[in-house]
Length: 498
Image (tube, rainbow, N blue to C red; front, side, top):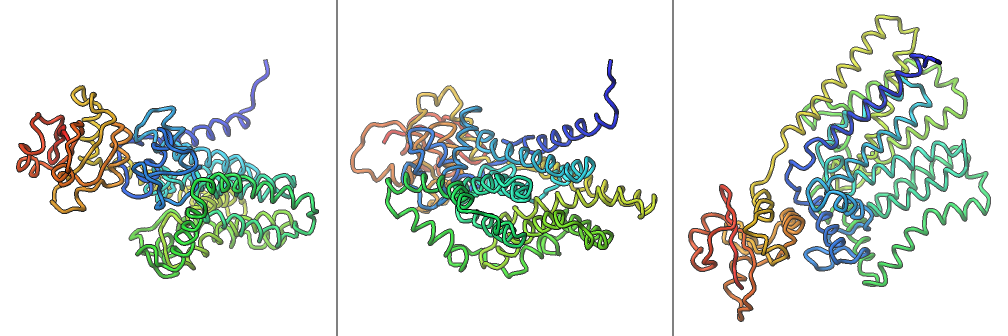
């Protein structure tokens, strides 16, 4: 019987273990944290309403056309997939985002194998310490970023393989289209990087009319099909708001108050703004050390390898510089730059460990430093997962929706009074709208107790009211005659007739 050489077997085993580690970090306690009040909640409501009687083209919020979330619907389809598999839960909301990052790590690891097996393993290992992306708005969050960064990453990999097979240019164009259908104009950076790469490497000179036709068809046809379907629903309204809000509003700073100087991202990820040494600074240092050590080799590098190095540089620098130039800044805008930086750090570390001219002791020291970085920041990711907070109000909504006492109210109208007595506190927070819709199929209506007490006509419909304990003690006899359906430390749920 033929024996499998040990050198053949160690790589796939370690590769599978590392992908398993990233899967663990992505999925472990995925449904514990409360639903975030902004993009995650909005995408969740959009997806739930699409899947439950809404349009697959037009997103809605509280059953009305949504012109706040101005993204095309591909990420919502991802959430719908999770709901189809796991039911209407917080885990289902975030499932596709976590899966997207696992697939991203798998693809990057396989691509990095072209530089060596050790380099491939270290590239995946460094993706496991992507601390900010694990913490906020990507890997463990039910919004568009994780899928978008996956598509961005695949497009960049295809771009760097165009020289091997020209058909990768069409794949890159198609991935651009999917990225646009996920995160709108953010996908324009794929076109910028791809255009610069093709121009600087001279690939564009080789293209003929057929190449241009297929490339443009792959890039534009999916977008045009969606745009035509959307236009039939509300004409130019959605597209006009996309441009005014997602482009003009975010670039000139009029949309939000997230105004920051050009140096914001550099200071946070590589400087002192985050209050700690980040894994991204460590990754940058590793890359710079590799450039110094291999400077002569880089100068003498064959043309094909220099092309690939250019691709990595554009992939890291263009999103970072482009979003530094606009006034409106959020940490996740430059997530597409963090993936190649971490992966390249792993590749560079692998090359340094192989470099015999460094000497045995220096290589051992380098290996120890790399292991220290991975252990420290891997533990940081685990601590972040362990410290996730729940939300008392959301947990009450879930408990009531699952209780036997409230089963007859599934699908009813739900009202809220968070407790201050002000009008705004009688309107549903969007993070709670998702939980109410997903777990109880409730139709959330704003207005709270004020709405219930000021109606001109009583329709004898039964609904549910979530309110704070103090308001319940003051107004229980007015709003309901029944015992509470459920209660927590600060909130009570009661049935109401309106």
